[in-house]
Amino acid sequence: MDKEVGEMEWNDGRLDDLSKKVDDQGERMDKGFAKVDQRFEQVDRKMDAGFARLDRRIDQLDQKMDEGFARVDASFARVDSRLDALNHVLIQSIWTFGIGLLGFAGALLAVIADK
Image (cartoon, rainbow, N blue to C red; front, side, top):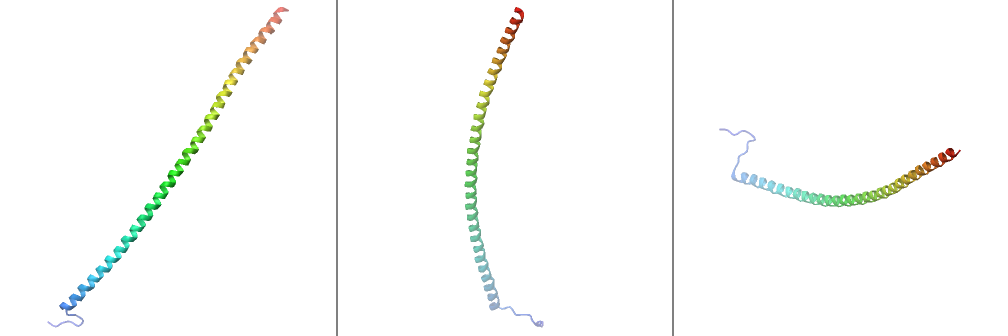
């Protein structure tokens, strides 16, 4: 058979060259993937550190909110006790007014009955 123009003859030397090129390309790819792996590890560390800072900030905010709600609860407790005291005074005043009114009505009836 006649060989076509442009067809190359593959001999052991050419196959060895191709094998070396493939091996070299594989080594370059391994080095590139190693760099990518290192970069992912850096990103993971940065993200872990960032999430740790975020967790601390959320914990601080949670503590501040708890303290703020405790102050609001204490304020409501003071207002509640003041309203209880006002309620007690108003009830006493109503009873005093009612008894005074009954006494006045009794005195008025006595004056009217005397005439």
